[in-house]
Length: 101
Image 1 (cartoon, rainbow, N blue to C red):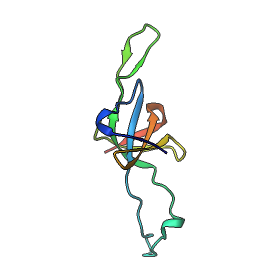
Image 2: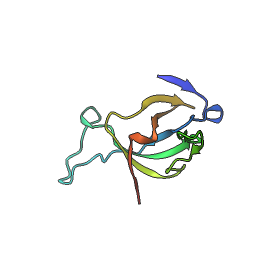
Image 3: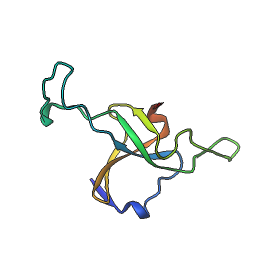
């Protein structure tokens, strides 16, 4: 896992930095799920966004997401990195399925 200081890191083009939101630790029936059996959550909060990708005319197309948005993304999306000691994901905007709320 790569390590970068967040203050000096800015994603490029149509990439975003996502912080995973914690998964539920109990089932609806009240059973506590051990850490080894938990799936990584597919919900997160956008921490930083790139400027956008260039379209065919060479113009920058801004992203639809912004820092602070809660999003849903694919199970295997993104690359895990450690920035300022925090485990985050870097992914393309196209890996995000939607904005929550």
